[in-house]
Length: 125
Image 1 (cartoon, one colour):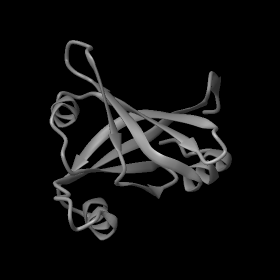
Image 2: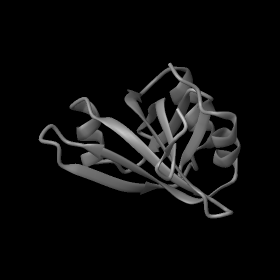
Image 3: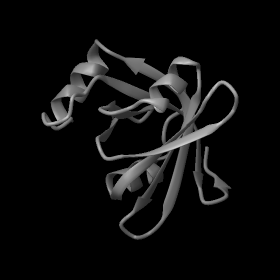
Image 4: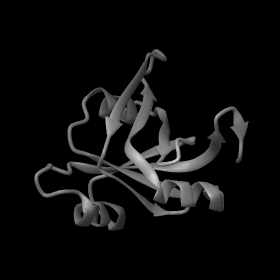
């Protein structure tokens, strides 16, 4: 598994607003959502809380890979691509339950495993 480059890890800590999570269905039809309940589990995994997924959850169960797009307070954009996992129990799920606001259901922790990283068109990993 790959790790976020140090500059991107620092940029994640300075991100502004929600992230965009993109998946595709079994026919290749894209789906993108905004997500605010997110965290970096470690340098290899970004976690998105499944609070209200529908098409996104279906796409994950069909084997979709994913892409997370975020922007920093300075206006620099980054995209992280990788395989997706769906955890309804275990260490990652328990961690998500700690930071996910209690007003949201937190059905599961979706993990994007870092494989590729971009800043604009520049491939960083």
